[in-house]
Image 1 (cartoon, helix red, strand yellow):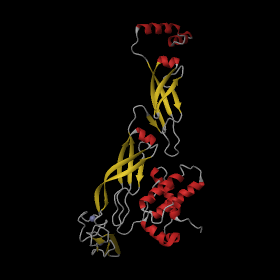
Image 2 (cartoon, rainbow, N blue to C red):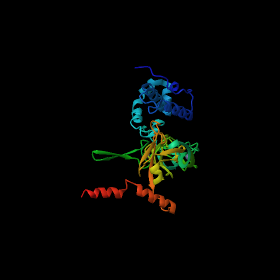
Image 3 (cartoon, rainbow, N blue to C red):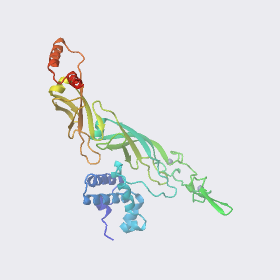
Image 4 (spheres, protein in one colour):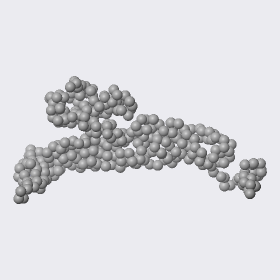
Amino acid sequence: MTTKKDYYEILGVERDVDSDTLKKRYRKVAMKYHPDRNPGDKEAEEKFKEASEAYAVLSDVEKRKIYDQYGHEGLNGAGFSGAGDFNDIFSDFGDIFQEFFGFGRGRRRRSGAVRGSDLRYDLEIEFEDAVFGADKELELLKNEKCERCSGTGSEPGTSPEVCPGCGGSGQYTESQGFFTVRSTCPYCKGKGSIIKDPCRECKGRGVVQKKRKVSLKIPKGVDNGSKLRLSGEGEAGSGGGPNGDLYIFITIKPHKHFERRGTDLICYVDITFIQAALGDKITIPTINGELEIEIPKGTQFGDKIRLRNEGVPSLRTGQRGDQIVIFHIKTPTSINKKQEKLLKEFNKLDENKITNKLKNLLKGF
Ligand SMILES: [Zn+2]
Ligand SMILES: [Zn+2]
């Protein structure tokens, strides 16, 4: 077995690091070495895996305790294998929050510990925020661990008692002839303990509903329907169970000029048939501001020009898409006498007139 690097060293943190600093530090390291940012770089991928493994352990109170006491060997002994957790991360790159918080799934359930519920938050963002990224603060109501009883549900100074219905196993066993039927203890609902003296703050639930602010970083390039996951920002778990996750479903407000197609931005530009025929220089909007472009001579209705790198950055690679300008030719509905005269003159001179083409076609019959 190869010697493994120290988890604290990998993340560059002190041994007494608190969970917030740890999370921040991990995000930094993970973002730096993320395979999407370092395509084909084996060394970066290794570093990313190392950091993810280190974080998986250090962010878990129990695993961290074992690691602090017994090192890597201790974790092997406890039946924890890092590999399982990573395959999870790498199998699901579509979920962009995996890159920051790839954990929380498949956590083993301790007896009586219940994982908090996941929360859903629908967030509508400005078109530009999706293109350039943004920092948002969300306010939501959620169940959080009750501080008065530290989530136990028992009034401070008292503690839950072993359930008399099941003797603490949380299961109810009943013999029916040859069979033994096991079911969840109806008395304690499987927890194995009951609260005699419920906490006054949370009425024994162990959680209280609170308004909470959550900061969210919207990555550049999110699209309609993108789903962001904030691990551990869901409802509080109970009985020592982990928090649920917060899922943010993104919808993007429409833009007055642009339509988005993947990383490309489509915009329709009205021009006159004179501009189409003669060519012209016009100023059009781009997501980065105004830009002067040239209408080519002889432009037809629906002709396109592509403006490189004026689109939306790709969520994965950061590479920007293009802006595609589609020309719509408008026929004037009111013209003055002089214009009419000139157009009639032009018409007489026009060899390519459609009526001429028709005449030539009919000659063949
Ligand atoms: Zn309480
Ligand atoms: Zn019971």
